[in-house]
Length: 439
Ligand code: 5AD
Ligand code: SF4
Image: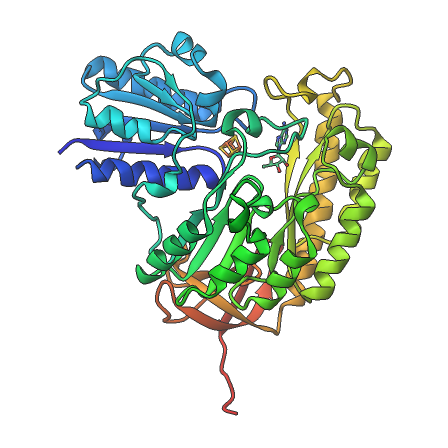
């Protein structure tokens, strides 16, 4: 049996795409190799979050080249966003690569393998199928991603995604509900809806099929067996009242929202083409908290966008302080090929960006620790993911607010356990099985 190995870089969308790549290769009769060395087909699913290719990726790619020199039968395949951003240039830099494709063209890998490695040379990037139609291989039996859309119609000036993942295309409601039912029947309890901009879902569908993202949540909430629904990432501009109402009313939709802020300065937001102001973002947060008390809020923030002054950065700190996030992913701005911001004149000096991100991370961690400490003494529903990696005598899982929780107990993977929270840090909660008094 021929064997494959897939190595993944980047975001959840890529983790999901890799599951499709694995499922596809297995449907063609291949098996998973334990490591790169044992594989006949070496796949790299790349990310382009940095301008330069990821150093780890390049190191592994060079190992793959050495392995191919020893055994010329090996095939090296590079998929994903970085691959897409490079196109033909990738073959000039790394001529030993056999096949390259972008995130919308995973099925080309299937065609290539099915044809015995005989495909016309070149880079495949057209988007014509949802990877959702391909078989998948889930890492966990009880958790699944559900890709609801592909691509993005926004024009955030820092972002390379629209150019590598194309315009937004939504999967139909029927398709999504069908897949959710199949996944539930296969043991899935938690669904994470994925899209570059999940809450603009459906606008490109034919008139009779536009249920809106709120409508989609309501339909998926009805699927038996799905206990939890999450989604990532929404855009604040599309966070309409009907979406908030659906979140509040649907039992399975978790009390957690990842709402990218990017900057707290309205001037910088404008240059970023985010289409909302700091004030509008804050009033949105107010409406969300009023509708869903206790909801956990997380975000993405970029520091050092071109032209960001100390005053702009302080406004970001003020918004972060006013919202008090449960967690934030913080990024130092880095120019990406072909984006509008990369050509802007006033790039911020590296040491200034470093100083700002350190201050921001401190503030974010202080809020995270406070939020977690406030949960001590409460009882949380935890979806068990299995034993803790650091201490196998403990179970690890997540609360509905998406907090990693460690506790001693005998619940199995995929079960929901009630846990009394006894300890907290800025990163995790710790507790014990809750004793529920009989009513
Ligand atoms: N520089 C830094 N961070 C970026 N992000 C997107 N593009 C850039 C960039 N050029 C961040 C945004 C986005 C997250 C996934 O990555 O915060 O929400
Ligand atoms: Fe994900 Fe963006 Fe990286 Fe692509 S470039 S893998 S969409 S983070």
